[in-house]
Length: 113
Length: 111
View 1 (cartoon, rainbow over the protein chains, first blue to last red):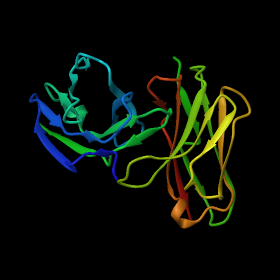
View 2: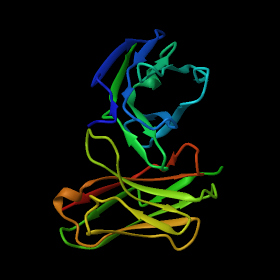
View 3: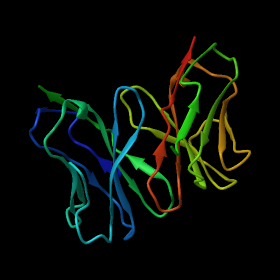
């Protein structure tokens, strides 16, 4: 069974608008971490934001925020005020007991001028 | 700046000719990882090290080997590359319990 599901293969957004990228996860471990990474066409994976399973508040990092709904097992990434440079692949990932990350299949975001 | 460095950025090899990809880090992280990422797919973990303890994923082919001679360096050896091994190879590092930092990747082409 897939542990990380990203149901949006592609998303489009107008520059300066906000966009939400969906991520749902499946785990029976009470302790886990959720991550979002950005991968531009150059290939490098860039860490964006982290949410721990015991964190009470949603994580925020600049224009990025993570909408964490534990009961629904969702960890959606919200990008506010989209910029052209935000066009990239976005991967949601989960870390359980081990240090290993399990990635979703990714969402390709295109920001239109 | 502290970083993860991968060399070379682009590697072309011939079918069956051994190739070695290298990764170095200045972050002093104790965990290092090698991922394979094929076009339009998610990264797939091949191996990882906790310090010198080597951990192989169950489905990593025997054709892939790794070495970590010290904290800073890690190598991926592909003994007999096949056409199906053409991919982006990503190295990452982390401290235990923290986010992984990735290098820029090595794009491998097999002719």
